[in-house]
Length: 453
Image (tube, rainbow, N blue to C red; front, side, top):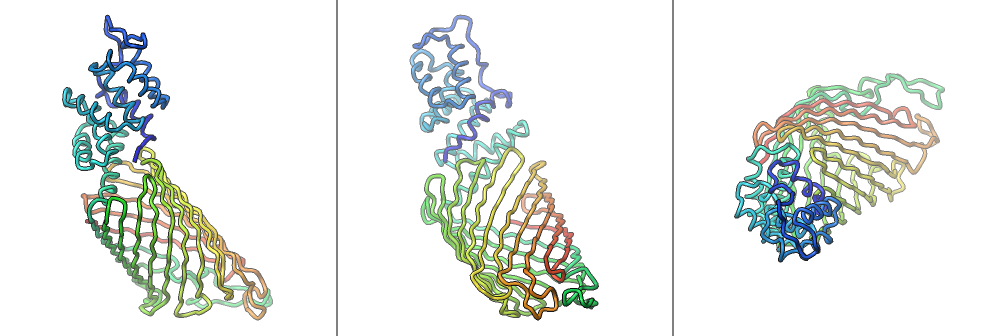
């Protein structure tokens, strides 16, 4: 994978690192080169081309002057950088190996040599070099770049050998609406002819709770381009006030991936089962396929087409199946991670509760340090029900039902050690419906501890 988006950053790292090669200046009596430029003028021209992302032109100019300038550290550094960004990674590796051997204390040479190994798929060598760089006192943005490469190495290494991971979490919190019911105590019925007084059970119930969750993943590569991933997970939410609305679930997911260049084609599916109050509630299944495209380590895009179904054990009118299209993009810039997703799901059933869903998600994450992250998540869903309320319904008979669900969440993670982290989470949900009885608000506050290994 060739990370051209790093070109500008790496071209200007000379000034940022304070570990640059020798200054880009001419000697007192520089030798002329084949283009008639002095060494100082040549290096200045090459540096300018690299900053302007004219990588192929810089590579061609450097090659015209090999006989006259090769061996000069300033020139060799720019030659290697131009070769690296122009896609001649093998040649760049040779240049930076020579520079690093002659100046092993130069961290900039180490950085570019590590990049060469990374782009060539030599992950053990690249990881060792980046690990050595990370031990030095680097500027924060450069340190984050090194860490980003290390994370990429970890992900890419999964395509070379089997790997597994397990995460366990325990948390406690407070839920202001465990039964997702209205907070109104009176509801107009029969087009306002009467007012119904709701019982406590029909209104929102608040309760403290504890949650347990666990996830296990196993990834099996079959070649450098084929991979299979299995995920098993489960969660349990136990309310302190009543067991009637306790919610438990288990999930199994299997996905096959084929990697071609900067793209991955995936095919997979999952099955999930829910219990409400320790009684079977419903099952959900999904089959999916799509394309994952990563033009650089800074940008990742995903297109997913899925077929989904639900079998509700308590209400057959909630059974449905629907195709869904999802478009997602993700970017990582310095210490900020941002992602956005759009989706559309079209219900194929004609039950009274059949609905089409449209929506979007936005996530912004900020990493203060290696230990501490903050994430803001926004979600919106528009549910358009196929059929209006029946004429004999108590609540708004004959009226079309449309709902707007909005959610905002804020999550803070703090890593105590490499495998243990603390988290605090706040979420507010607002569901606005054209039918008053279906409107509700919900807030959750949660804190807990996670272990991952």
